[in-house]
Image (cartoon, rainbow, N blue to C red):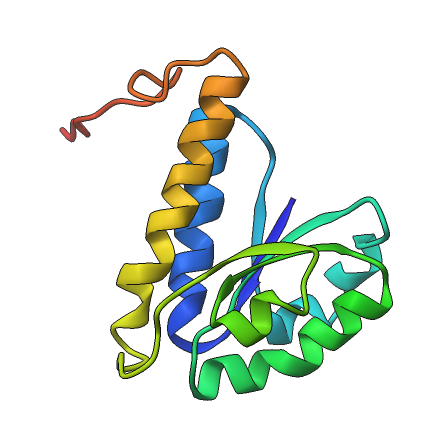
Length: 141
């Protein structure tokens, strides 16, 4: 699975990939939209799930050419973001971004992605509160 974004949405994409991997054990890679076009795009085809975190602002505008390329490759594209972006995707979750500053939108974006990680984990018969090999406290010496 590939998760991509630009601007303020990129840390959200990284966090979503981490949550999916640590709770459901599904390999998930996060890429900046710019980096995705420089090689990793080659692994995307019509059976590749791609989640795009699309902010309503400059980051979302910068991601538009990436979304066009993903659609062109036939990716199974899921968009988390403004309604008009979700309507152009295979599926998605429309966020109420009207009047919300772009730098605050990650607070809205991460919620459906954490719920996705939770639901996938449950569906796979895992315990999202007790992922294997993950310590809740980091010990240093």
